[in-house]
Length: 385
Image (cartoon, rainbow, N blue to C red):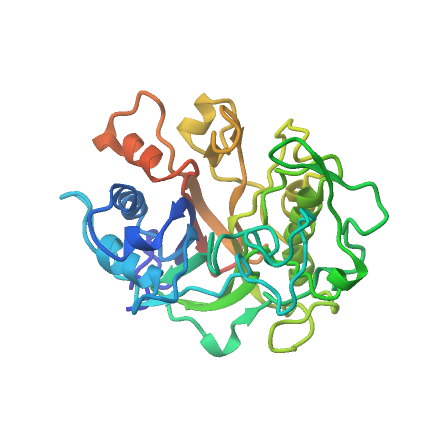
């Protein structure tokens, strides 16, 4: 019920463990029934660290089931010990927000400029084969203040001042699967409907012991799979920028209910999830480096101590949270749990054992679950001293 009665440091009501885990393409048929190897491996990784607040990226949504996929994952996997030496986790509070992925506008547009209109995945607001593809969900031991949740799924990209949208008339080139050149941009008509969030941006207040903490969740589009115009890179840049502007209280922001403005000055918050943006990647696909500008060098987030792992260190980047994925051999830091500066970070880590670690075969389950690694942080509600 609503989290631990005592914190890990023995101080009553002070500390919460937050975790972000991108479990690559965890689909409906995997979580609605027991016995799926990837879901079991992911649940085992989560149970190793027992987070109080958890976001699962890439947990698909499905409107054709009686039970939301996050609730099915909790019931069929997270609540059941995946080893005799582990405890199940019964998350009482869950939320699976609507996603722009696979959602088409009322009028058909050719967003991806392939000559066809209104076809998924490329002509949806967010890349997806169906509504809710590549979605995300939140599970918590602490109550959610549902009346204060703010979603920004319908916020239009063009309404962000100084946005980087490639527009009609610019030299915007992307290569399709046959290596033919396609002009990629937004027309004036498309600017009036195109949404900023490829999934959604959402602010979920948790009533943790000691006060309210706002969980800030998003999963920006990957800044790759496009050409020299860097359409997806610019989209990712502005998606990452959004929450930096939100915590700074920028007044251009409006939510899905029409309420304007950013987060209150005195609010505590934790940014969580796969931002698809990381520093020092050394790849031409991601030249804008929005994570450096809007997260790591931003005084509105505490980043003096970033989560690390032995596995990442062995591969040359201690703070890495992903290995391989779309680019073989690439090690990158793109998943985050970042507190506001008024909160106190007690400890943090990435669940990625070293290559030679043999602790209960944890490394095998880490690799089975995803190409991403779970990131966690123990954060207290009192200021740092």
